[in-house]
Image (cartoon, rainbow, N blue to C red; front, side):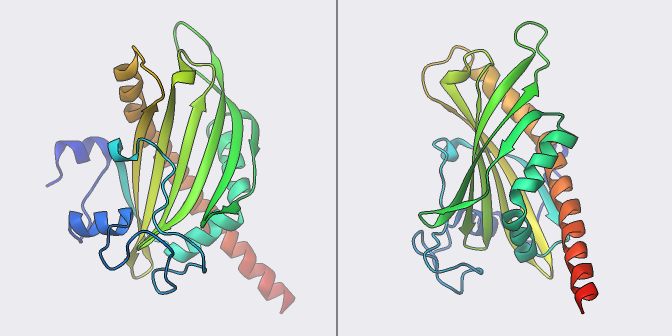
Amino acid sequence: MASAASQETGIGHDVRSEQELEAGVLGNDPKQSQGDASVDSVWVEKGDVLDFKHGKAFAQRKQVFKKRLEVNIRDLFRYIYEDGANIYTEFHKSVMGDWDVKITSWENVGGHRERTGSFTKKLNYSIGPKQTRVAEKSFLAFTSTGFRLEWEIHNKDVPMGSSFRVENYFDFHDAGEGHTICIGYTAVNFLVFNLLKGKIASGALKDTPGAYAKLLDFITYGMERYFAEKNLSKLSVA
């Protein structure tokens, strides 16, 4: 039976133990410590580093989402990496209703991938600003059984926005037989003392699961369409 927490967040249970999931997602596998990734760990290239983490609040992250996907993890990585800027730009515009969206392409940096983005989004405050500019940094790195997609988000125009950064993590790992487990986490890195710390942290935990679900659905649908179009292109050439 699912716990109360799992019922509220949609977090279920995988067939593997929690220890095995932690080892795979967080790169704590004793057979593969952090450092240069070996060629047999997943599908990495020489020079890639396992378990890179940019976020300063990673140790304080909270699990808010978990879903089993009927997609191959290598195809998923390929889609996010090859068509990543287009995916995220379209997601912000068509699903989230954001505007002034600018997303760069991935760049290889020290054994992982990075990109930057910016957009403007609406706020639902009864008092205060009605919109905010957002600056975002994204990171893509391998773990011992998959990969991690990480965001650092700066909401520039919210109250005390300069004092904190929201950190979001998607950890994808291979569940075998063409399936992938996605586990979502969120954390807040407070740069200075903040009187609204508790409210900001609880708001991030409340808002993140819904946004995660929308993004994951958008990615998986787009991935199916992306590879279908590629296959049609190959057939037409043949």
